[in-house]
Image (cartoon, rainbow, N blue to C red; front, side, top):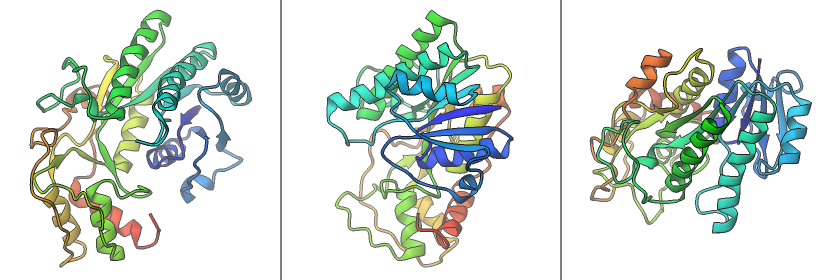
Length: 311
């Protein structure tokens, strides 16, 4: 059994590669400009884990990749960095990249393609968020815009071709290998373990609530979605099933390092209310999987990792 994971050098991609390897799959992971490593994955290099430098917008490069490896499943995680490339390049990579991946999977008779979407697609709606909610046209940034556009075009592509294409609306993920200080769990964990001084002008808001999912749970959820024998739906929420207040993240860190402090700004973002979380009952019903970590155990595992690793 083999799977192609595009964008496999991202922190979700690396943990998901490990999950598939642990479940007996061979993994082909693509990278373009960025390379990151996870020791538990790298030990399988040249045997069951293969890194390939590929432009996912190139039909020729993808055909060569499929010809080289016997790929049965595709997990499409590749995307551009938020706010990175100029708008036209952003569109080309996200939209044309998805079309190229889907068409390569069609030509090579892949069993199932799972495409990463995002909780940000629900921006403007009142939670809890259900997969059956009509999506608003407006978005709060490039991630939500591209993910909604990708779902619309991807599902139509499935209708036209008869392919098994499934979208995973993923919550806010945190944990080992998260390489920036964008989310509050990473800032707080690095503050507790490394004495990181948060000098960012924009502080997390004390009143905000996030559906936080530990990266190991996200990886296992993606494995279950990819390998479920039958799926009744084509869009699934992958999250914790609850909203975590940001002060609870700090409290979880203090359970590991008593006395650690962190400064929040006052206020609450309208998208981060106590009800702003993903309803995961449809996913649990069809795969039997529920996350193993709450914010307390997830932060403990993350902080333990940081004692011996840089990120």
